[in-house]
Length: 322
Image (cartoon, rainbow, N blue to C red; front, side, top):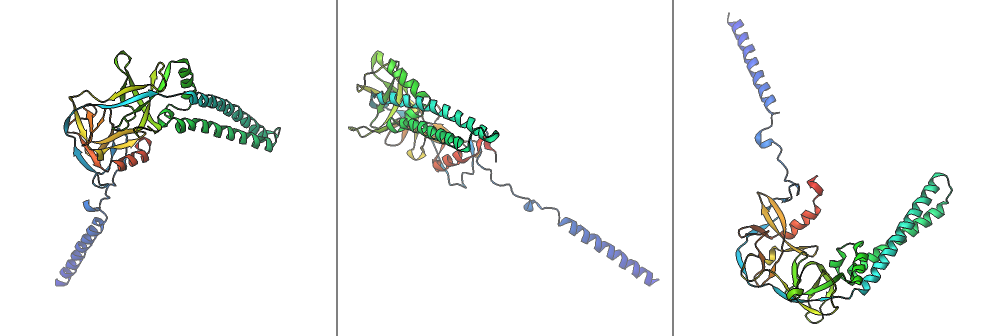
């Protein structure tokens, strides 16, 4: 009787050991919470209009904007510039555009004939393609002359707008104004008051002008005014809010420049940053005084690493897609 009981005990012990081994073996394939794959840091994305990054990972430092009272705006002077060279550039652009259209159509026609039935020789097709490329290069050079001779601000209007601007200037309905301010050039998009009394006009800055002022050694900006203006006549220019207006003080370290305009990056949500343009800013010894509007006291902005955010924003794919 003892022998059957011993055998039964061995069988029961072996079954329990096998069940334990099966449990451990199956449990080894179940991922533990610590073994779960960790989510990779999100790539910079702008799907919601903000740039999302890990601020600590890329070394960003933030500061809170203090309130300030704007004491005075910038003072400078403005004068209309001679647009006779612009008329020549406009005519060159128009002629080059016509040549590009004609040579491009001829090259397309000859290449199609050469590929279909041989009614045009391969040499003729290649010569037509070379002429089309030459005409395109001539048009590119004509467009580049605007920036080289007048400045990047005027070039931002686009090559197609230059002939029309030259015609309007000749008709006396438009003029190009250069604005110089000793405190520094106003950013693109800033509003500047030019002139006095009933003749005062509010002009929007296009961007940098070519060359510096010979007397003040300042970097000027360009703006377009309706109507005609006497070339070379000096007019007073003012920019900024009236004295006593509420504003915020932006540290110089927070500024980034893109396309001739000044921006700061403001924190948004947990890990988002949005680029804010400075409008009506007035340069001072302690920083830039900006009227309350897009920025408010208490906003947190990037004071170190803003250039990194600008690079990431320009490198991020459109729509935030990977």
